[in-house]
Image 1: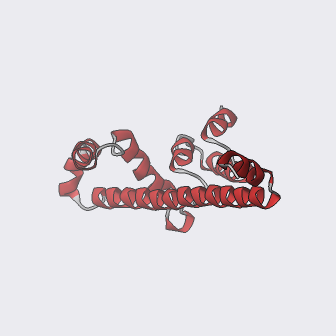
Image 2: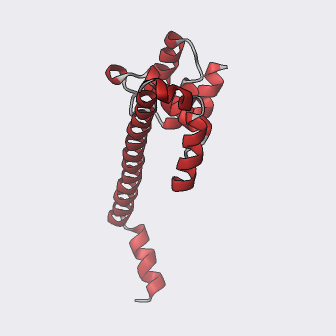
Length: 150
């Protein structure tokens, strides 16, 4: 039997189609789980970086003077060491994440860092909480969250 005829027979086979479906589903699920695991790690890391910044700022009067330039200096130094991800604005949001979501109210792992950047732009805590909950319930993308909030 030629290879083309063999493939034609396999493709028409229902068991083969089930196999393709199972593999595709498992692969898609695996990708989703990997993204979630990375997201959980990033949120926890960014929250803790925010904690380090706040604790350093609160560390005494000798640090208060340095604190005025702290975010700029951290951005410069960490960008040299780690590359992208430590922009001034990102560090400000990491700090804000820690301040706005204390340990008892840690951010939900159901939303991404990008969701929280958008949510942290909302000053009113009740309003932010509303959009956070809606984002989780409705599974809003970032553009949808922005659209709903405007």
